[in-house]
Length: 338
Ligand code: UDP
Image 1: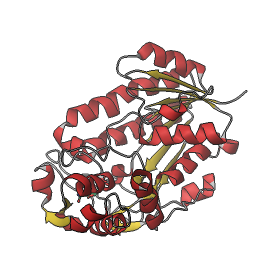
Image 2: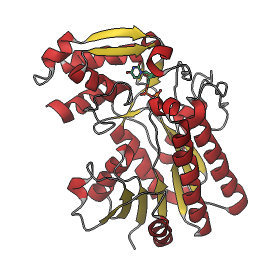
Image 3: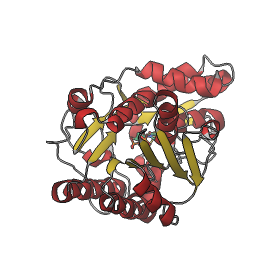
């Protein structure tokens, strides 16, 4: 019998790419819920895709029924945009923690497999050169730095899931995305500053504002991971050959795509000049340093670097990321402007 996969948040950045890949390459069935369907319009006719529009905080019965019906559950609904951590910290806690805990308990009750998105943010300001799932400390700032509510919400869920594994034999995999990028990350047509994650923000800055703002000068580093590499890892986790992913935590990131945010902005601007649709705007855009306080407000604090160890993913999943930063940026710009 074909595997039945339940994806909550199926229209999100990871959900839509994952569903597209599954329908194209596997014989699995996908059951999905989301508030919207703009990113999955092209998949709705597929007979192996069963979509319903709904809200995970309201449609408990549909979710409960489908957890029972499916083999694997991926609750991908979350707010994962740093600007929101400081403007709406309670919404982050209520959705990312409370709503998901409710779902996790159902997965435990029906003894299904759980694949849950942790985050590279859990490592916070850890000073390890490469973050390791088993040995690195998770380091966050004081309570008045509300940016860390996301990291803490995810960390506590990780600990609860781990405990369900230890005490009630829950079969789970926690995965930690390291700055996944690609088409359909956040909308690039958002007119409001600070509403998207860095790369989508920079593209929208070129289009609408003529100015890219570099928080604290953009000296902080991130490892950007192209979405198709992330999806490749997730498919291996779902496949779980010989139980290779069971009761494990995986960093999913590309340590070779390590750049400063300033360099990222400069590369996006340089590449954008090759696309006639935005070349003129890209030539004119200014890159300006701003303080974190001016950009996000006083309750923001940042991680200055974030490099994954991917030894576990390589060893247990046989996974290595393939897409370089240059190629990732090119494919993203191609999607919008080619
Ligand atoms: N950033 C920036 N300018 C922007 C948006 C983001 O300098 O317009 C910085 C942000 O402060 C962070 C980095 O870019 O240090 C990556 O931000 P992102 O929103 O992608 O998420 P994070 O990696 O912090 O979770």
